[in-house]
Length: 336
Image 1 (spheres, rainbow, N blue to C red):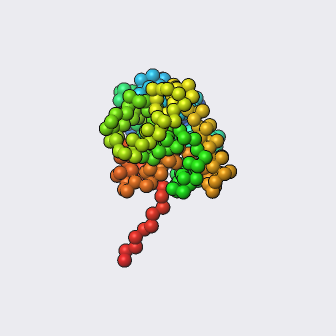
Image 2 (cartoon, helix red, strand yellow):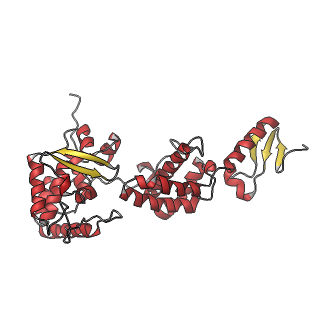
Image 3 (cartoon, rainbow, N blue to C red):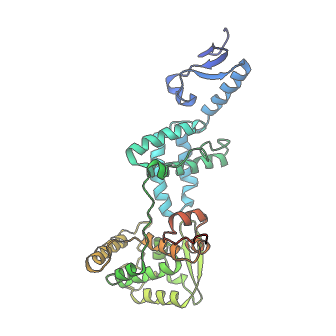
């Protein structure tokens, strides 16, 4: 047919566009892309695709997200997201934001899985969803095409099973026989409150009053206030008694400073913890070490019910508590 736009063809009763090699990602990777049966239908479809091509590049949105949104997240979250954002910028950043489709994302995840594994691919999907949600708020795109469409890799795909280590009471007691006094005080506070490692190490004397303990939660930048009980008071007094030097922090290092640096890292504390686990395995009945995260999971597992576990762990989603922190095996009551 005459007077059709360039690279259009009419074939088998429909209009087609023949994308150039560099355009094919926008057209589902096809060499012949069907636009519609009628000329007006084809023009509308082609115009919509052209609009998508004119949207900002994903790399530009990633830059804006890093500047405006990422600083509002917790330090450890920022560190993890920055790594994922670098991968996304390199792998998908050249694409217009409007062209990011489920098909394109699945191709990216499959390629990344071969190099880094399924868990890394899941992380990048989580992060790009955050970027695309922000793009919707900024008015760059109308909706996030990945949300609810692109699925995370799961156990059926061969994803490694989530950590389910449950620390028994006797294992905790065995470790305590070789742990330092400060480590025992730290564990006592975590076991009573369920707070995260970095939040516990950041507790200052100013956060402790006669009736409450206030903890600044870095993950969501929201303070949590605990009622002062006899057990919590005893754990705090033990932490004070074993300070290596005078300090404004409740659990300071040998210089009186916070173990957690500005980047959210606590390498000296982590190294000391691993060393204590090695000694416990050598000198006690403990056969497998456990992490500070496992202690937090023990708090969630030992809570009387899921609601109480969610409250202690400060989770907004009950599914997070259920999936990752309720690790203790429970007997199921039969029907009769």
